[in-house]
Structures are given as C-alpha cells and as structure tokens.
Amino acid sequence: MMNYEHILVTVNLTKINQQVIDRALSLAKATGAKVSFIHVDLSCTENFSILRECDETPAEEISNSKSASKEELQRQLQALADRADYPITNTLVVSGGLRYKLEQTIRKMDVDLLVCGHHHNFWSRVVSSVRELVDTSPIDLLIVHLDD
Image (tube, rainbow, N blue to C red; front, top):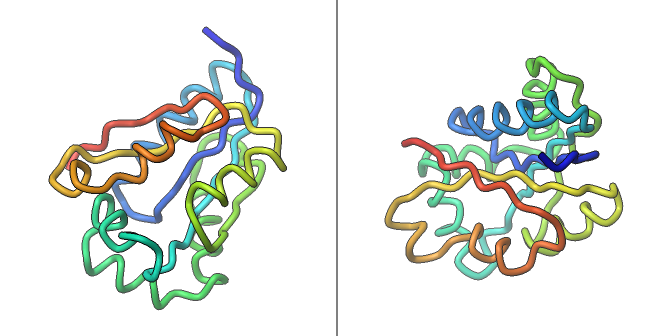
C-alpha cells in the first residue's frame, strides 16, 4: 500500500458524503496521513454546474446551499470535522471552478491523494465533475462509489 501523507477530501455537505469521509479516514488511519476537507462552492453560471451538482445533491439541498453564506458553509464543514474520529488538519470553503480550486489547493497544501464521491446515475453519465478530475488531477485520485 502506498503511504499517503496528506489526503484532501471533497465534501458537498450532504448526508451521503459520510461515505466519502469514512473511506478517506480509513486510509488516513492506515497510513498516518493528514486529512483536510474542502467544499468548493460552484457558481450556477459555470458550464453545466447545476447539472454537476444534481449529480451529487438533491434539488432542495442545492437551493439551500446556494443561499448559505461562506461562514455557514464553513460552520457545516467544521461540524463534520468535529464529528470525525480522526484529526482534520484543515477545513476549507472556496468558490470558483472545481478543477482550478482543487489544483490550487493541492499544490499549496502539498496534498498527494484526492478523495471524492461519485453517483452512478443519469446525471453522472451526462455531465460529471469526476470525469474532469480523472482527466486533470495532478495527484492520485480515489473515487468512492456513492449509494443512492
């Protein structure tokens, strides 16, 4: 098993995301890696971003997260970190393009594994942010299959 030193977990602040967090924490415990959480607040004006979010988030949760302030999103992310049974090094809420913000964070924080979730449903087949990450991630990528 490769020993990772810093794992970055993408979190969309939904209940289903616990599967992604659990998988990342399991790896971190086995390797002693640092863990950071990141939530990328996508703008609805980005190309197909609303479809990308539908890939992972029920419509009512999208509208709720769009109205949430950055401070509220940070509070929700920190609450997830506080409930984790492993120390979380950083909790980040950023806005902008998913790929760009993740690449920027990966380089800045010296991350060597990116963990994200992926549904296998209609929207995932049409437009998938995970596909974009697979094609562009500068580091190893763990994609966690999310049960609906």
